Image (cartoon, rainbow, N blue to C red; front, side, top):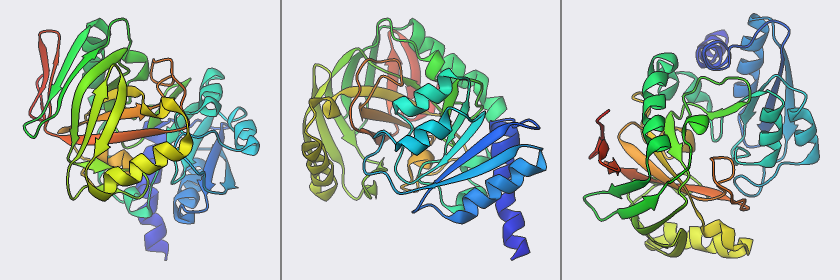
Amino acid sequence: MEMNRHDHLYGARRLVTICTDVQPGERVLIVRDSSTSRVIAAALADATREVGGVPTILEVEDAKTDSGEPPEKVRAALVTADVVFAAVQVSITHTHAVQAACKRGARVAALTQWVPEMLLGGGIDADFRAIEPTVLKVAKVFDEGSRVTVRTRIGTDMVLDISGRKATPHAKTGVVRAGQFHPIPDIEAPVSPVTGSGVIVCDASIPYLGIGLLKEPVVLKVVDGSVVSIEGGQAAATVREKWESLGDPNVYHLAELGIGMNPEARLTGRMLDDEGVATTCHFGIGTSDTLGGNVKAPSHFDFVLNAPTIVVDDIVVMEEGRLKL
């Protein structure tokens, strides 16, 4: 029992010291939903106490939709914390509640879909602070770019307009500073397109709605910044039915292109492993106003692609999954 507790402290200590740099006396809120293991919350609380922080564990029921707004008691608690660990199975990341906490200067670490084994190794092993400059370098290319093409051997062919959109404020390095939220162990450079058209062939993962790793590709057609069709077996049907049930046209909005940059992450079917894998990119559909866009939807789902080639204006950023910068 003690050995297991110590083992889980490995990742918790990295989250508390490296990722969020908790200081003595800081108020640390650990939000745990009913589907997330108590082991994770307990390890985070122990690691927080070790550095002199003051942890509070807030137990909540599972949210219904990824990036749907959390209950009032969560919103109220978020704005009183210095550091937040959101250990939930259904994401609260792209929400106004988290934005409000960040505006007050909180450091928010999103631990969506975490399981205890993620505290033992894997993506959490990354040297977050050493990778940070490269993530910011990619983000700067997006900042200064206007046209992006994303292509894969199996058929993705997207052209995006990112004119005037800034990526640097939204870069996810795993090093969380005041006023920022970072999904961990995801490391990525995301940008929110103004618009875009083409075909997305998602062949790696849809880490939402219980789908995870894909058995067959899912094909999305995008016209003028909006998904107009999604096909590809049961996975596509699950997403389509969810979107239709939400009854909001913004769920189809092309919200994000993100480039995975965590060399220790592997595809597992879990959101924050998959989106950070260093040989992938993902397209986010739905809410964009937490990523530099201007659309608020009742959902945000990411579609992860293997081995993309990504060109920003005349700069090859990634070639068949290999970062070129």
